[in-house]
Amino acid sequence: MTKYITVIGLEVHAELKTKSKAFCSCSTEFGGAPNTHICPVCLGMPGALPVLNEQVVEFAIRAGLALNCDIKYFNKFDRKNYFYPDLSKNYQISQFDKPICLNGYIDVDVDGVEKRIGITRIHMEEDAGKLVHSGGNISTSDFSAVDYNRAGVPLIEIVSEPDMRSAEEARAYLENLKAILEYTDVCDCKMQEGSLRCDANISLMPEGATEFGTRAEVKNLNSFRALVRAIEYEVERQKEILENGGRVIQETRTWDDANGKTLSMRSKEEAHDYRYFSEPDLVPVELDDAWVERIRAELPELPAQRQARLIAELGLPKYDASIIVSNKAMAEYFDEAVKTTKDAKGIANWLLGDVSAYLNNEGITISEFKVAPAHLAELVNLTKEGVLSSKLAKKVFAEMLKGDKSPKILVRELGLEQVSDEGAIMKLVEEILAENPQSVADFKAGKERAIGFLVGQIMKKSKGKANPTMVQAMLKEKMQ
Ligand SMILES: [Zn+2]
Image (tube, rainbow, N blue to C red):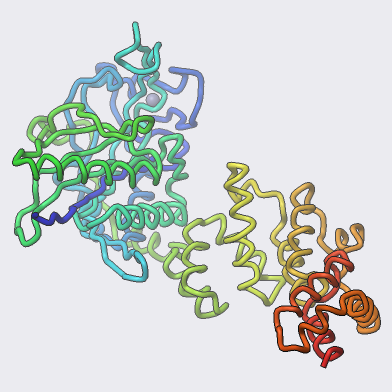
């Protein structure tokens, strides 16, 4: 049987966080009443002239620098011509042969293996409007209405090289890209609201082949999970065609999340179908060195640098650091928390463990998390100092979730201080030994396990408050 290699390239559209649209002064705010953020320019009325929003160029340069691209000091806009009801102009202003950024890359880490994924280009363009179907989808609707609020909202499209070889690599690339766009503050990256959208080009080639196979472009990938599932589905679908002697056709497919399949939309159009030509209403964009260098100097700490800092300065394991930095808000929470504790690993354990579990459960992000970073740090300190056992710390954490109170106050209110008083613990040890002569005899006969039972009894009796390390040591001492 032939073995196949999967070849994946991603095209990511990121809506830029500008206040106004790319070529007019209409608001870019999400969720306004339909057709309230529109004007003759973004509707493409005859005679209306576009004027480029400088902030769009600034954001594109910032993203390009953060993604290690060459910034093109001379770039220009083109018209991409096509008809669809959500595009009232019948063309989209985009960049074709002279985009603003070329030749970048992102380094990803999949299961400890580093890999560099190339970025072919980044170009600026405008978004289209949105169709609102009267039924569930276009084929079950009697009519559809159009909302042009999104028409003219600025985007950058980031096109990768076909460098990814598995769904995991594609996922890692998209996660890294999303984090970089968040850190540079050019996009709010809300996949569910469509401000970050991903299309995947997927093909298979027999092992040893020198040419890529025919690819299918899958659209409508609105989550990391959808990306992974769609790739896995496409690989199986194409493999089956090839193994049965068939040929994969070049086409655009859509991801049906509910049914877990890709469906054919249309045969893939080629660039020449769009009749690209230079946008006659806009002058080319010419950048100067001072502008680009000013943006370069102002770049914030990026995820990879932050990860290196957490490892080098705070001694975090690479795995913990990579998860924390992959989410900008989580990284900021972490930085805030470690200001008041020396136990960085303790904070990481909470963030990756109970805090993440709670956030997932509630379906919220860390930005909406009510526990203050300083309070989480206090909880870590109380555990480290031996005031709380890890079991009781979880109990205090559960109380902190109900209303952000200081864990020190909660420990007092709930009477949860760990008992580390030697006299008090000795008293418990003696009581339990007297009540369990059989276990004592077992221990003396060499059954080490008996001590676990006795520790358990003491912890139970102390309602979990006895310091378990002391209990263990004093039990042994007493029985020997
Ligand atoms: Zn407008």
